[in-house]
Image (cartoon, one colour):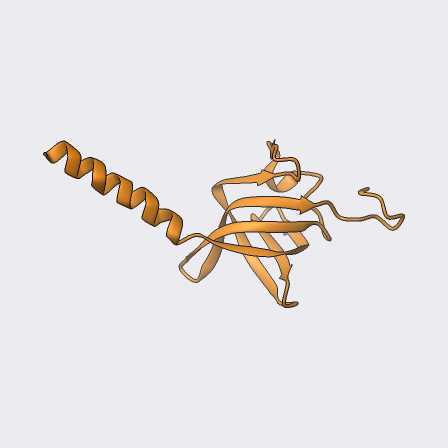
Length: 111
């Protein structure tokens, strides 16, 4: 009986932890590797500062995780992103940064 209760409690905790996560969609304005922060201009034109969490991942448009994290060459100003985050102590802390489209160069390419 106790084992069932503990299992159910663990399941509720895991499910509830996902409830607190939120998403931010927009374009990267700047990346600060030293401060571990991104500034993203959201769909409403507002700049949002997001702290990159210790366990956060950067995922490219094809679903591959970038091992360089914030130093990924694809994560640059103009790139479209969807950020999964939690608000901690008044700050948005990212757990995942999904690059949905690369920044376009002056010639229209991804470079």
